[in-house]
Image 1 (tube, rainbow, N blue to C red):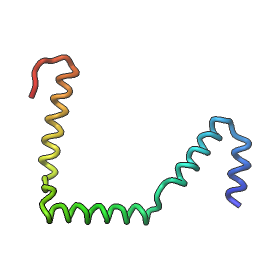
Image 2 (image 1 turned 135 degrees about the vertical axis):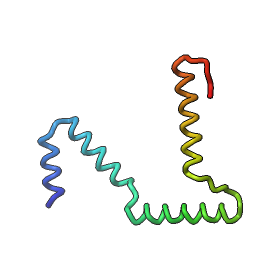
Image 3 (image 1 turned 90 degrees about the horizontal axis):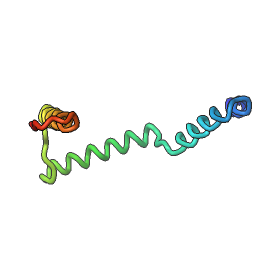
Image 4 (image 1 turned 30 degrees about the vertical axis):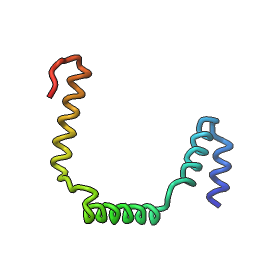
Amino acid sequence: MKLDKTVKEKHQSSEEEGVSLARAFLLSLDAPSDAEMAQDWLAEAYRHVRQLDDKTAQFVLAQEIKRKALALMRKITITFSGGSRTT
């Protein structure tokens, strides 16, 4: 059995490797399945469509989001580099 082999290998590994293996195992228990993730994404997409339909959200083109994000990053870069110029 694959689990028996994994347990046997764990006993032969270092403590650090054992901790890493245990962490990976525990995280895998909490991770949603592919089907659950697909269902969650679909529910989120329907939620966004409803918001657009009832006008509680506004559609924004990706190019506009990118333009604003780049402008903000330039402003942050100027601030952190010690420059006094803002854009």
